[in-house]
Length: 505
Image (cartoon, rainbow, N blue to C red; front, side, top):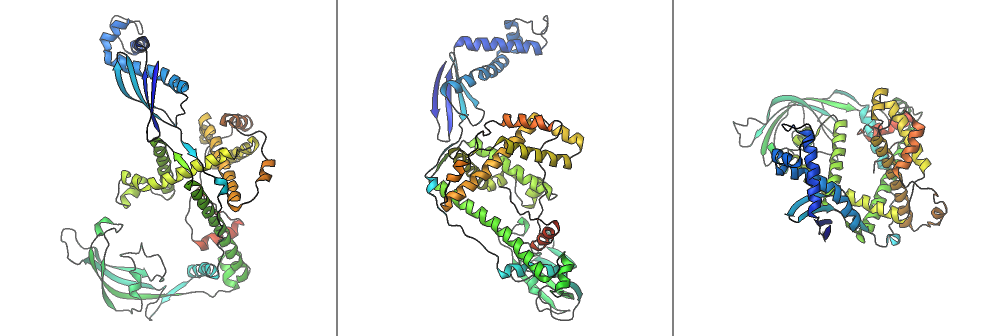
């Protein structure tokens, strides 16, 4: 067997493999036997037809096709071992160059290669964002708004008022085929604060503040030109005209910020306790944000002096994971991918193109952390992995019916669970290590505490878990993602006496 290797610029390898003619002939005969067992050939029992009869009955092309598969399964692993090639994933047969002698061309995606610079010399200043008085006041204001009462008002409309208007809208140059933008209707409009996010305001951004100082009976005509990149395609570059008549104004009356209010919104004895709780929880969130930002800056600094090589297939896989995560988040919000794409007026290919830079950065970040972990010899103790897996098993048993949970207990799912836990633990330990490095802290203490028996194989940890868990069930814990306002988070955290602002990394 003759082998020629040609490295490609995209971190793939082109393999040209020449095999002996008799090796191909043997593969063809083996393929013919397989065909003879599957296909009924007149005059012969299954699998008993001679080679020439199978060849004439099934055709040489069919025999060759199966022979190539047999040949590849046989010689491809030999080639990788002989040439000491470390592939990222399965290779593919790209071309049959010749049949006499048999010469094949393979494409092999290579395992990623990461060359780190002097990452131990990286230093990054830690910026500690602290809670300001206005942060606390903003949450208090939101809580007061939630408890506000509404009553009729004969005063000019102001921020926070609910104004009922009769509204109609059309293009500046009407289009009979497309019809009016808005048929006349009565609807309530909340006048937003000046610093509020107006991007999703209807019928156009900033609409509500046009009602400031208006009185019952006032009539207005508003014009708005939608930009060419507006989120709804039908309104892009449209010059619109809206007619408004103020029909009713309801004012919002805020409660007093006192001890009674504190007790109303939660189990707070006084305003002081409420205020302190808000401050503590905001600071915990800021601390988490500070940590994530710090780690991001460190990894960016390490990347500057590092070289990362990866095959296109690796980025494709990362993109698949990224889109799967997005789809799971959408399902938790009661939406599917089709509706999401329709709402954004784009197809799947356009979405892939849009998120590819994010997937690429995520992949590079993971590769950098993986290499740092390798060089720092960061390892996880088997007993720590086992404890984490048992915790996951218990949670799954609580979330799923027994029959469904047992169905999830397969060797593959358990192996994936263990691998995921090991990966998460190594990631956590590696991030802690680079934070110490970036601060210039000593690492000697960690060397002394080095684990003697690391987890080298997923199978080892899996065996230990299976032995103890018996018929327990495993699978990835399903967490419901919820978007909450700061004020609601404060109340829920107080009731549960816990704070859970962690982000998945």
